[in-house]
Amino acid sequence: MNNLCKVCLTATRQINHPKFGVYHCCDHCGFISKDKEDHISTQAQQDIYDYHHNSIDDPVYVQYFNIFLDKAVFPYIYNGKYVLDFGSGPSPVLATMLQDTYGYQVDIYDLFYSPIRSYLNKTYDLITVTEVLEHLEDPIHYFKLFAKHINENGILAIMTHFHANNDTDFLDWHYIRDRSHISFFTDRTFEILAKKVNLQIIYTDHKKYVTFRKQTLV
Image (cartoon, rainbow, N blue to C red; front, side, top):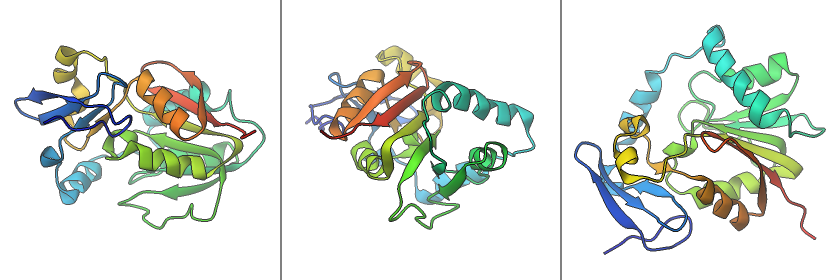
């Protein structure tokens, strides 16, 4: 029996990887989700994250975020200074850059490393979600959350690798080798997610960056 897509509720088909498990693929919106039975434990997830040793003192890692900011954020952000870095990680390098280098006021949230929900009862001019969405099980839930906490004309900027919408390429893709990655997206997936929560795609490089603006309800 096919599962229903978590994004568009269309029946999915199953693709199998001999090492990493079962994936449910939606041919309507392109969303692929890893079967719940193949999710790793919360502790195993944290062990993977703890292994990352990124630092504000690493120029390569800083440049990695500067490219993201230059392509997906700065051309589209209007007046505003309040930022939420959602999924800031063990070392909040992007948040530090936005605050110390560019003068934004930044809140951070991370399930493991900054679990206090600092965004409650607040809205932001910019929400950044970098290398996080692939770890989240329910995209609709989180897109509703993001939309709720974005100011009018504010933006949501996401970094995650888009899959090629080809089973052979997907099963050989480096991105699924991280066992904590459970959700995979295409341009079409993001179009449908945006429509569901009243966001508008204003930029994508069709590879790993996508930026949304909150639409004004008329």
